[in-house]
Amino acid sequence: MSALQEKLNKIVDEATEKLKKVALELVQALPAASEAVPILHDFILLDRSGSMVNKWIEALTSINVYVQELAKKEETKGTKITIAVFDSQGFDVVRNGVSVLECNPITDNEAYPRGMTPLYDSVVKLVALAEKKNPTNSCIVVMTDGLENASREASKETAKISLDRCRAKTWQVIFLGADFNNMQQGLDLGNMAGQTMSVNSVNLNQTMRGTASMRTKYAASGQSMSYSSKDKEEALKTNNWQK
Image 1: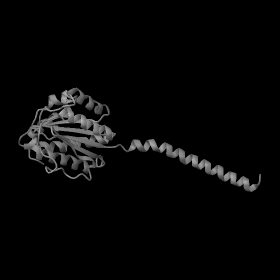
Image 2: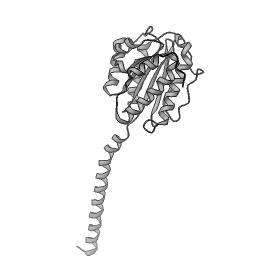
Image 3: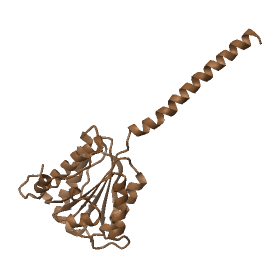
Image 4: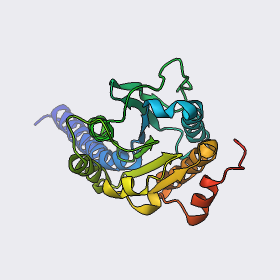
């Protein structure tokens, strides 16, 4: 073998070893990268039935507050948001996977109360959206002011099963009753008492601001979201100013 051939072989061997080393480093880095960047995506389901008319602006404003609060925090500013409104005439997605940094406030020009409350049908539809997106970290908020009265496809049992799949992923599920004692409703659908709360509609902004704060802790550390007894007392007060 000539000296030139030996030199070429040496160069090839060295290059091959370097490529193997780079490839190994890339393979080892891929799992770590996917684990280090969780996908945050929240889903809000808002009752648009006719009885919401006297608290509609408060409800919309409170959702806007929630989105704005998430956008302020380092832990949650990467969150995407999907918002759906529902009644017996339709289920409409008014925001679909929008970054909280780019989400325009919802107004009553986009949706207005009408019809009845197909809660079970709508829960199943929202969960289907969430499962299709399949985030690693999610909070589902259901805001309503009354009982189920118009579902045609889903039952209480199938709605609960859908939400149970979300809880099994450690997604947080929040039920808020606007001027409505929703505790039994939440419990019937598998929710814990600490994640189910009745709210005087004048306090919806304050409540959603607090919910966003809990959401930030959940994003940062996995801490379960739960309303305290004090939170529940404050939510029902009639003399709180909108903040």
